[in-house]
Image (cartoon, rainbow, N blue to C red; front, side, top):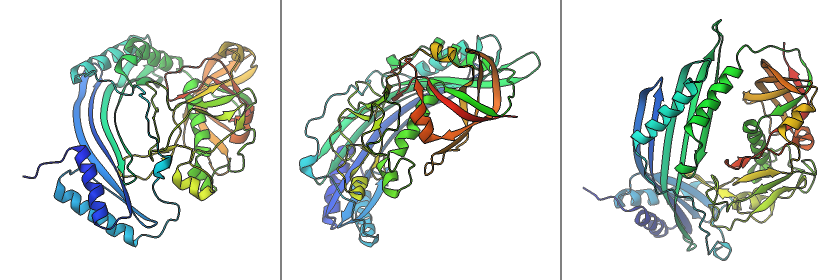
Length: 448
């Protein structure tokens, strides 16, 4: 029986075979990962899983013709066929003048240690105990009557990147997370659901199960007996969980691939003001234990901390080699990729700074508004910037958060939302995107 190659040997073998079959250039990306997870519901075990997988891909170039193949079989004969197939594919696909590997002289030579790997092992039973404890904390909240389940998972990966440019990067990465979702009910049988979660690179950096469980339970209970409101124009406040989503929309709008296609509402806004002057959006790919930290990008190009938006002004696009070539610009070190895929631009760790007031002060200054805690639907047009999402939350009346509301839609223009947003100072640095509570003045709110 053929013996599988080690991941590093498989990658070197693939690149060698690609060159033998006539490829002008090639790169390979490999991942060896283990995932342990546990789920429970109503204090009963639902699943205990342990999965170990290893796979590689190969991206080849015949002139300006690229092709990508992947396999989870790391045996020589299978990899020989894979490399041969990749080159055959590349010879018949249309030319792409912007594809290719990075210039070796531009690739990173020294890579900082970002503390991205937690070597401590956790058994499935330990993960189950955490899920049970989290669920128990949520169920102990008065008004919660049923769990929709709790789960915990830990992933550990060994990753290797190598190419014919001579670049090679080999590193370990880990992640851990857990969550719980519960249903609250009142005496009349009305029900509402909510959840909470925690994620981190190191298991020890996760929030406590008591905190996450209690938060999920309290969120569900507070949503009971929501009211409907009339359609009107109101100040809309996004809690940090939703504010992070909104900043994610901004990064999508400055993604070089979208800019090159002309499919972004911000395509003409480079070096112009898109946020209030007091706000700056910082990116730090070198953050220790950061959820999106990276010492270099997926094309081997150096990363560096920078302000994507400085004092309200958009300073850069997020560019990989391909999108940079289309725009006749230099790449910015934002390439990311997964197994079997081509590089694409993406942001690393982000922090929105400049908020001066507390959330309490913000709320106190709102006479009529909505504090939004959940959004639904995909009503975002990235070409025009039109924004319309279903929402639930709480009414803000004369500076106080009062009754829950549901069955509303919040709508506006993303350009206006970004330029007029008001940020508070309640930053929490635990996430990939760290964004405080945001107020979006005078949005359209559709109700009954």
